[in-house]
Length: 448
Image (cartoon, rainbow, N blue to C red; front, side, top):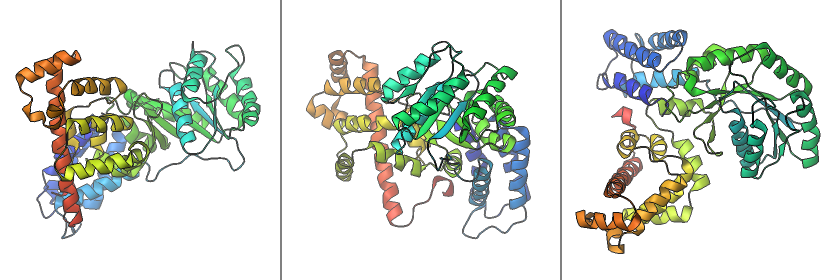
Protein backbone atom coordinates (compact mmCIF):
# COMPACT_ATOMS: atom_id res chain seq x y z
CA UNK A 1 0.00 0.00 0.00
CA UNK A 2 1.34 3.43 -0.95
CA UNK A 3 2.62 5.55 1.97
CA UNK A 4 2.79 2.55 4.33
CA UNK A 5 6.55 2.85 4.78
CA UNK A 6 6.33 6.64 5.08
CA UNK A 7 3.55 6.35 7.67
CA UNK A 8 5.59 3.92 9.78
CA UNK A 9 8.73 6.05 9.66
CA UNK A 10 7.00 9.37 10.39
CA UNK A 11 5.09 7.80 13.28
CA UNK A 12 8.29 6.29 14.69
CA UNK A 13 10.11 9.62 14.45
CA UNK A 14 7.39 11.47 16.35
CA UNK A 15 6.93 8.69 18.93
CA UNK A 16 10.46 9.37 20.22
CA UNK A 17 9.33 12.67 21.73
CA UNK A 18 5.78 11.59 22.50
CA UNK A 19 5.88 12.18 26.24
CA UNK A 20 8.03 15.34 26.24
CA UNK A 21 6.33 18.48 27.50
CA UNK A 22 8.50 20.89 25.50
CA UNK A 23 10.18 20.78 22.10
CA UNK A 24 13.90 21.14 22.73
CA UNK A 25 16.36 22.09 20.01
CA UNK A 26 17.81 18.56 20.14
CA UNK A 27 14.33 16.99 19.88
CA UNK A 28 13.53 19.11 16.85
CA UNK A 29 16.86 18.38 15.19
CA UNK A 30 16.51 14.61 15.61
CA UNK A 31 12.84 14.55 14.59
CA UNK A 32 13.44 16.61 11.47
CA UNK A 33 16.32 14.35 10.51
CA UNK A 34 14.02 11.32 10.73
CA UNK A 35 11.26 13.12 8.83
CA UNK A 36 13.74 14.13 6.12
CA UNK A 37 15.00 10.56 5.72
CA UNK A 38 11.47 9.17 5.66
CA UNK A 39 10.42 11.54 2.87
CA UNK A 40 13.53 10.91 0.81
CA UNK A 41 13.06 7.14 1.12
CA UNK A 42 9.46 7.66 -0.04
CA UNK A 43 10.92 9.15 -3.24
CA UNK A 44 9.83 12.73 -2.51
CA UNK A 45 11.72 15.35 -4.52
CA UNK A 46 14.86 16.55 -2.67
CA UNK A 47 14.03 20.25 -3.01
CA UNK A 48 10.50 19.61 -1.75
CA UNK A 49 11.86 17.75 1.28
CA UNK A 50 14.28 20.55 2.08
CA UNK A 51 11.58 23.22 1.89
CA UNK A 52 9.09 21.10 3.83
CA UNK A 53 11.42 20.45 6.77
CA UNK A 54 12.53 24.10 6.79
CA UNK A 55 8.93 25.21 7.23
CA UNK A 56 8.43 22.79 10.12
CA UNK A 57 11.61 24.00 11.79
CA UNK A 58 10.60 27.64 11.31
CA UNK A 59 7.19 27.04 12.88
CA UNK A 60 8.37 24.85 15.78
CA UNK A 61 11.65 26.42 16.84
CA UNK A 62 11.38 28.63 19.89
CA UNK A 63 7.60 28.47 19.98
CA UNK A 64 5.65 28.07 23.19
CA UNK A 65 3.87 24.70 23.12
CA UNK A 66 0.17 24.67 24.03
CA UNK A 67 0.03 23.35 27.64
CA UNK A 68 -2.66 20.87 26.58
CA UNK A 69 -0.29 19.26 24.04
CA UNK A 70 2.87 17.22 24.42
CA UNK A 71 5.88 17.90 22.21
CA UNK A 72 4.94 14.96 20.00
CA UNK A 73 1.38 16.18 19.53
CA UNK A 74 2.60 19.68 18.72
CA UNK A 75 5.00 18.39 16.05
CA UNK A 76 2.24 16.18 14.61
CA UNK A 77 -0.04 19.20 14.36
CA UNK A 78 2.57 21.17 12.41
CA UNK A 79 3.56 18.23 10.17
CA UNK A 80 -0.11 17.55 9.42
CA UNK A 81 -0.79 21.16 8.45
CA UNK A 82 2.34 21.36 6.27
CA UNK A 83 1.49 18.04 4.58
CA UNK A 84 -1.92 19.43 3.67
CA UNK A 85 -0.28 22.51 2.15
CA UNK A 86 2.23 20.33 0.29
CA UNK A 87 -0.58 18.21 -1.18
CA UNK A 88 -2.44 21.25 -2.48
CA UNK A 89 -4.28 22.68 0.51
CA UNK A 90 -7.85 22.10 -0.60
CA UNK A 91 -9.63 19.68 -2.93
CA UNK A 92 -9.29 20.64 -6.59
CA UNK A 93 -12.61 19.89 -8.28
CA UNK A 94 -13.44 19.43 -11.95
CA UNK A 95 -14.36 22.58 -13.85
CA UNK A 96 -17.74 21.92 -15.43
CA UNK A 97 -18.94 24.13 -18.26
CA UNK A 98 -21.94 26.39 -17.70
CA UNK A 99 -22.96 25.47 -21.25
CA UNK A 100 -22.68 21.68 -21.69
CA UNK A 101 -21.05 19.58 -22.85
CA UNK A 102 -18.06 19.73 -20.54
CA UNK A 103 -15.05 18.39 -22.46
CA UNK A 104 -12.33 16.50 -20.59
CA UNK A 105 -9.15 15.32 -22.34
CA UNK A 106 -7.18 12.56 -20.68
CA UNK A 107 -3.52 12.52 -21.69
CA UNK A 108 -0.39 10.68 -20.61
CA UNK A 109 2.27 8.18 -21.51
CA UNK A 110 1.50 4.67 -22.62
CA UNK A 111 0.99 2.21 -19.77
CA UNK A 112 -0.15 4.73 -17.16
CA UNK A 113 -3.72 3.39 -17.18
CA UNK A 114 -5.28 6.14 -19.27
CA UNK A 115 -8.02 4.15 -21.03
CA UNK A 116 -9.11 2.44 -17.81
CA UNK A 117 -9.13 5.84 -16.08
CA UNK A 118 -11.52 7.13 -18.75
CA UNK A 119 -13.93 4.35 -17.77
CA UNK A 120 -13.45 4.96 -14.05
CA UNK A 121 -14.02 8.69 -14.44
CA UNK A 122 -17.12 8.10 -16.57
CA UNK A 123 -18.46 5.78 -13.88
CA UNK A 124 -17.72 8.34 -11.16
CA UNK A 125 -19.41 11.14 -13.13
CA UNK A 126 -22.54 9.07 -13.75
CA UNK A 127 -22.83 8.39 -10.02
CA UNK A 128 -22.75 12.15 -9.55
CA UNK A 129 -25.59 12.87 -11.96
CA UNK A 130 -23.68 13.39 -15.21
CA UNK A 131 -24.26 11.74 -18.61
CA UNK A 132 -20.78 11.01 -20.01
CA UNK A 133 -19.76 10.00 -23.52
CA UNK A 134 -16.42 8.19 -23.81
CA UNK A 135 -14.46 8.94 -26.98
CA UNK A 136 -11.91 6.49 -28.42
CA UNK A 137 -9.30 8.82 -29.94
CA UNK A 138 -6.26 6.59 -29.40
CA UNK A 139 -5.86 5.19 -32.91
CA UNK A 140 -2.26 4.00 -32.52
CA UNK A 141 -2.12 1.52 -29.66
CA UNK A 142 -3.36 -1.89 -30.78
CA UNK A 143 -6.82 -2.68 -29.36
CA UNK A 144 -7.11 0.69 -27.57
CA UNK A 145 -10.45 1.39 -29.30
CA UNK A 146 -11.69 -2.13 -28.54
CA UNK A 147 -10.63 -1.80 -24.90
CA UNK A 148 -12.71 1.34 -24.45
CA UNK A 149 -15.69 -0.25 -26.19
CA UNK A 150 -15.45 -3.24 -23.82
CA UNK A 151 -15.37 -0.84 -20.84
CA UNK A 152 -18.44 0.92 -22.29
CA UNK A 153 -20.34 -2.38 -22.42
CA UNK A 154 -19.30 -3.26 -18.87
CA UNK A 155 -20.62 0.07 -17.62
CA UNK A 156 -23.56 0.17 -20.05
CA UNK A 157 -22.41 3.61 -21.18
CA UNK A 158 -21.95 5.09 -24.69
CA UNK A 159 -18.59 5.03 -26.48
CA UNK A 160 -17.95 7.04 -29.65
CA UNK A 161 -15.39 5.60 -32.06
CA UNK A 162 -14.56 5.92 -35.75
CA UNK A 163 -12.05 3.10 -35.93
CA UNK A 164 -8.28 3.55 -36.23
CA UNK A 165 -8.10 5.05 -39.74
CA UNK A 166 -9.47 8.50 -38.88
CA UNK A 167 -7.31 11.22 -37.30
CA UNK A 168 -7.79 11.80 -33.55
CA UNK A 169 -8.57 15.47 -34.24
CA UNK A 170 -11.49 14.54 -36.53
CA UNK A 171 -12.74 11.99 -34.00
CA UNK A 172 -12.67 14.60 -31.23
CA UNK A 173 -14.58 17.10 -33.40
CA UNK A 174 -17.19 14.53 -34.43
CA UNK A 175 -17.77 13.52 -30.81
CA UNK A 176 -19.37 16.92 -30.12
CA UNK A 177 -22.21 16.14 -32.53
CA UNK A 178 -22.62 12.63 -31.15
CA UNK A 179 -22.81 13.94 -27.59
CA UNK A 180 -25.56 16.33 -28.65
CA UNK A 181 -27.52 13.49 -30.30
CA UNK A 182 -27.26 11.30 -27.17
CA UNK A 183 -27.96 14.23 -24.80
CA UNK A 184 -24.62 13.65 -23.07
CA UNK A 185 -23.41 16.57 -20.93
CA UNK A 186 -19.79 15.40 -20.50
CA UNK A 187 -17.26 14.19 -23.10
CA UNK A 188 -14.22 12.16 -22.02
CA UNK A 189 -11.57 11.92 -24.75
CA UNK A 190 -9.09 9.04 -24.51
CA UNK A 191 -5.98 10.27 -26.36
CA UNK A 192 -2.94 8.40 -27.60
CA UNK A 193 0.19 7.95 -25.49
CA UNK A 194 3.80 7.10 -26.18
CA UNK A 195 6.48 5.28 -24.24
CA UNK A 196 8.19 8.65 -23.88
CA UNK A 197 7.42 12.31 -24.61
CA UNK A 198 8.05 13.37 -28.22
CA UNK A 199 7.16 16.28 -30.50
CA UNK A 200 4.70 14.30 -32.61
CA UNK A 201 2.67 13.29 -29.55
CA UNK A 202 2.58 16.83 -28.17
CA UNK A 203 1.74 18.27 -31.57
CA UNK A 204 -1.28 15.98 -31.92
CA UNK A 205 -2.51 16.76 -28.40
CA UNK A 206 -2.17 20.49 -29.08
CA UNK A 207 -4.25 20.05 -32.25
CA UNK A 208 -7.01 18.26 -30.34
CA UNK A 209 -6.95 20.97 -27.69
CA UNK A 210 -7.27 23.69 -30.36
CA UNK A 211 -10.09 21.82 -32.10
CA UNK A 212 -12.41 21.19 -29.11
CA UNK A 213 -11.21 23.69 -26.46
CA UNK A 214 -11.47 21.30 -23.46
CA UNK A 215 -12.56 22.48 -20.02
CA UNK A 216 -10.14 20.07 -18.39
CA UNK A 217 -6.90 18.41 -19.50
CA UNK A 218 -6.14 15.66 -17.01
CA UNK A 219 -2.76 13.95 -17.04
CA UNK A 220 -2.81 10.29 -16.03
CA UNK A 221 0.39 9.23 -14.27
CA UNK A 222 1.45 5.94 -12.72
CA UNK A 223 2.38 6.29 -9.03
CA UNK A 224 4.79 3.38 -9.44
CA UNK A 225 7.08 5.50 -11.62
CA UNK A 226 8.03 7.70 -8.66
CA UNK A 227 9.89 10.92 -9.52
CA UNK A 228 9.51 10.22 -13.24
CA UNK A 229 5.81 11.01 -12.79
CA UNK A 230 6.75 14.51 -11.61
CA UNK A 231 9.05 15.00 -14.63
CA UNK A 232 6.26 13.86 -16.98
CA UNK A 233 3.75 16.18 -15.29
CA UNK A 234 6.10 19.14 -15.66
CA UNK A 235 6.67 18.42 -19.37
CA UNK A 236 2.97 17.98 -20.20
CA UNK A 237 2.06 21.06 -18.20
CA UNK A 238 4.52 23.26 -20.09
CA UNK A 239 3.31 21.95 -23.45
CA UNK A 240 -0.46 21.75 -22.87
CA UNK A 241 -1.29 23.59 -19.67
CA UNK A 242 -2.83 20.61 -17.86
CA UNK A 243 -5.47 21.34 -15.24
CA UNK A 244 -4.93 18.36 -12.97
CA UNK A 245 -3.66 14.83 -12.45
CA UNK A 246 -5.15 11.38 -12.10
CA UNK A 247 -2.64 9.26 -10.16
CA UNK A 248 -3.13 5.54 -10.79
CA UNK A 249 -1.97 2.44 -8.87
CA UNK A 250 -1.81 4.26 -5.54
CA UNK A 251 -3.04 1.04 -3.93
CA UNK A 252 0.11 -0.81 -5.03
CA UNK A 253 3.68 -0.73 -3.79
CA UNK A 254 4.26 2.88 -4.81
CA UNK A 255 6.15 4.85 -2.19
CA UNK A 256 3.93 7.88 -2.72
CA UNK A 257 6.65 10.43 -3.43
CA UNK A 258 5.11 11.54 -6.72
CA UNK A 259 1.87 12.60 -5.03
CA UNK A 260 3.78 14.57 -2.41
CA UNK A 261 6.05 16.25 -4.96
CA UNK A 262 3.91 17.00 -7.98
CA UNK A 263 2.03 20.07 -6.70
CA UNK A 264 5.21 21.77 -5.52
CA UNK A 265 7.36 20.88 -8.55
CA UNK A 266 4.93 20.94 -11.48
CA UNK A 267 2.24 23.17 -9.92
CA UNK A 268 -0.46 20.66 -10.92
CA UNK A 269 -3.14 19.61 -8.42
CA UNK A 270 -4.01 15.94 -8.05
CA UNK A 271 -7.75 15.64 -8.74
CA UNK A 272 -8.29 11.87 -8.61
CA UNK A 273 -6.45 8.79 -7.40
CA UNK A 274 -6.90 5.24 -8.66
CA UNK A 275 -7.10 2.79 -5.76
CA UNK A 276 -7.61 -0.50 -7.60
CA UNK A 277 -8.31 -2.14 -10.94
CA UNK A 278 -12.10 -2.19 -10.79
CA UNK A 279 -14.09 0.48 -12.62
CA UNK A 280 -15.40 1.98 -9.38
CA UNK A 281 -11.90 2.31 -7.88
CA UNK A 282 -11.41 6.03 -8.48
CA UNK A 283 -11.58 8.54 -5.64
CA UNK A 284 -11.51 12.35 -5.55
CA UNK A 285 -8.28 13.57 -3.99
CA UNK A 286 -8.58 15.39 -0.65
CA UNK A 287 -5.25 16.81 0.62
CA UNK A 288 -6.41 16.92 4.25
CA UNK A 289 -7.64 13.33 4.22
CA UNK A 290 -4.48 12.05 2.54
CA UNK A 291 -2.31 13.92 5.06
CA UNK A 292 -4.25 12.26 7.89
CA UNK A 293 -3.75 8.81 6.38
CA UNK A 294 -0.02 9.41 5.91
CA UNK A 295 0.29 10.23 9.62
CA UNK A 296 -1.69 7.14 10.64
CA UNK A 297 -4.71 9.20 11.69
CA UNK A 298 -7.09 7.37 9.36
CA UNK A 299 -9.59 8.81 6.90
CA UNK A 300 -12.98 8.42 8.51
CA UNK A 301 -14.78 10.79 6.12
CA UNK A 302 -13.81 8.76 3.04
CA UNK A 303 -14.76 5.55 4.82
CA UNK A 304 -18.19 6.97 5.68
CA UNK A 305 -18.75 8.06 2.08
CA UNK A 306 -17.82 4.61 0.77
CA UNK A 307 -19.96 2.89 3.38
CA UNK A 308 -23.00 5.01 2.54
CA UNK A 309 -22.80 3.74 -1.04
CA UNK A 310 -22.18 0.09 -0.22
CA UNK A 311 -23.54 -0.95 3.18
CA UNK A 312 -27.09 -2.10 3.86
CA UNK A 313 -28.27 0.07 6.77
CA UNK A 314 -30.64 -2.52 8.24
CA UNK A 315 -27.96 -5.23 8.19
CA UNK A 316 -25.54 -2.83 9.89
CA UNK A 317 -28.07 -2.19 12.66
CA UNK A 318 -28.53 -5.92 13.22
CA UNK A 319 -24.76 -6.36 13.46
CA UNK A 320 -24.48 -3.51 15.99
CA UNK A 321 -27.16 -5.10 18.18
CA UNK A 322 -25.47 -8.49 17.98
CA UNK A 323 -22.10 -6.98 18.90
CA UNK A 324 -23.64 -5.42 22.01
CA UNK A 325 -24.65 -8.93 23.04
CA UNK A 326 -21.22 -10.30 22.11
CA UNK A 327 -22.79 -12.53 19.44
CA UNK A 328 -20.44 -12.07 16.47
CA UNK A 329 -20.61 -15.36 14.55
CA UNK A 330 -19.09 -16.76 11.37
CA UNK A 331 -22.40 -16.23 9.56
CA UNK A 332 -22.22 -12.53 10.47
CA UNK A 333 -18.56 -12.46 9.43
CA UNK A 334 -19.52 -13.81 5.98
CA UNK A 335 -22.38 -11.30 5.62
CA UNK A 336 -19.97 -8.49 6.40
CA UNK A 337 -17.44 -9.79 3.87
CA UNK A 338 -20.14 -9.73 1.19
CA UNK A 339 -21.05 -6.13 2.01
CA UNK A 340 -17.61 -4.62 2.45
CA UNK A 341 -16.20 -6.26 -0.71
CA UNK A 342 -17.54 -3.15 -2.47
CA UNK A 343 -15.18 -0.99 -0.39
CA UNK A 344 -11.95 -2.68 -1.51
CA UNK A 345 -9.48 -4.79 0.45
CA UNK A 346 -9.98 -5.20 4.19
CA UNK A 347 -6.54 -3.72 4.84
CA UNK A 348 -7.40 -0.53 2.93
CA UNK A 349 -10.62 -0.17 4.93
CA UNK A 350 -8.87 -0.58 8.28
CA UNK A 351 -6.21 1.93 7.25
CA UNK A 352 -8.98 4.55 7.12
CA UNK A 353 -9.88 3.95 10.78
CA UNK A 354 -7.71 5.74 13.37
CA UNK A 355 -5.58 3.21 15.24
CA UNK A 356 -6.51 0.24 13.03
CA UNK A 357 -3.34 0.24 10.90
CA UNK A 358 -1.59 -2.33 13.07
CA UNK A 359 -4.61 -4.61 13.09
CA UNK A 360 -4.81 -4.42 9.29
CA UNK A 361 -1.26 -5.78 9.10
CA UNK A 362 -2.17 -8.65 11.44
CA UNK A 363 -5.19 -9.62 9.35
CA UNK A 364 -3.40 -9.20 6.04
CA UNK A 365 -4.67 -7.46 2.94
CA UNK A 366 -7.62 -9.70 2.11
CA UNK A 367 -8.89 -8.95 -1.37
CA UNK A 368 -12.64 -9.13 -1.01
CA UNK A 369 -13.42 -9.78 -4.65
CA UNK A 370 -16.10 -12.25 -5.69
CA UNK A 371 -13.68 -15.19 -5.83
CA UNK A 372 -12.37 -14.60 -2.31
CA UNK A 373 -15.85 -14.23 -0.83
CA UNK A 374 -17.01 -17.42 -2.57
CA UNK A 375 -14.03 -19.28 -1.08
CA UNK A 376 -14.88 -18.01 2.41
CA UNK A 377 -18.51 -18.94 1.86
CA UNK A 378 -17.57 -22.48 0.80
CA UNK A 379 -15.57 -23.02 4.00
CA UNK A 380 -18.20 -21.52 6.31
CA UNK A 381 -21.13 -23.42 4.75
CA UNK A 382 -19.17 -26.66 5.24
CA UNK A 383 -19.47 -26.11 8.99
CA UNK A 384 -22.39 -27.16 11.16
CA UNK A 385 -24.71 -24.42 12.56
CA UNK A 386 -23.16 -25.08 15.97
CA UNK A 387 -19.62 -24.54 14.62
CA UNK A 388 -20.61 -21.31 12.84
CA UNK A 389 -22.15 -19.97 16.04
CA UNK A 390 -19.20 -21.00 18.23
CA UNK A 391 -15.95 -21.42 16.19
CA UNK A 392 -13.96 -22.20 19.34
CA UNK A 393 -15.26 -25.78 19.31
CA UNK A 394 -13.60 -26.41 15.93
CA UNK A 395 -10.76 -28.78 16.81
CA UNK A 396 -8.29 -30.62 14.56
CA UNK A 397 -10.66 -33.37 13.40
CA UNK A 398 -13.42 -30.87 12.68
CA UNK A 399 -11.02 -28.76 10.61
CA UNK A 400 -10.13 -31.79 8.49
CA UNK A 401 -13.81 -32.55 7.93
CA UNK A 402 -14.58 -28.92 6.98
CA UNK A 403 -11.62 -28.78 4.59
CA UNK A 404 -12.68 -32.02 2.88
CA UNK A 405 -16.27 -30.79 2.61
CA UNK A 406 -15.38 -27.58 0.76
CA UNK A 407 -12.47 -28.80 -1.33
CA UNK A 408 -9.93 -26.66 0.55
CA UNK A 409 -6.93 -27.62 2.68
CA UNK A 410 -6.74 -27.40 6.46
CA UNK A 411 -4.45 -24.35 6.19
CA UNK A 412 -7.25 -22.42 4.42
CA UNK A 413 -9.65 -23.25 7.25
CA UNK A 414 -7.03 -22.14 9.79
CA UNK A 415 -6.54 -18.83 7.95
CA UNK A 416 -10.28 -18.17 7.93
CA UNK A 417 -10.59 -18.84 11.65
CA UNK A 418 -7.64 -16.56 12.38
CA UNK A 419 -9.15 -13.79 10.23
CA UNK A 420 -12.46 -14.22 12.01
CA UNK A 421 -10.82 -13.96 15.42
CA UNK A 422 -8.90 -10.82 14.45
CA UNK A 423 -12.11 -9.29 13.07
CA UNK A 424 -13.91 -10.10 16.31
CA UNK A 425 -11.14 -8.37 18.28
CA UNK A 426 -11.34 -5.38 15.95
CA UNK A 427 -15.10 -5.12 16.54
CA UNK A 428 -14.51 -5.10 20.29
CA UNK A 429 -11.82 -2.45 19.92
CA UNK A 430 -14.15 -0.25 17.88
CA UNK A 431 -16.87 -0.68 20.50
CA UNK A 432 -14.40 0.54 23.12
CA UNK A 433 -13.50 3.51 20.93
CA UNK A 434 -17.19 4.41 20.65
CA UNK A 435 -17.63 4.16 24.42
CA UNK A 436 -14.71 6.50 25.08
CA UNK A 437 -15.91 8.88 22.35
CA UNK A 438 -19.32 9.14 24.04
CA UNK A 439 -17.61 9.98 27.33
CA UNK A 440 -15.46 12.59 25.64
CA UNK A 441 -12.26 10.75 26.51
CA UNK A 442 -11.33 9.39 23.11
CA UNK A 443 -7.96 10.40 21.67
CA UNK A 444 -6.40 9.54 18.35
CA UNK A 445 -3.44 7.11 18.42
CA UNK A 446 -0.75 9.76 18.11
CA UNK A 447 -2.21 11.58 21.16
CA UNK A 448 -1.68 8.67 23.56
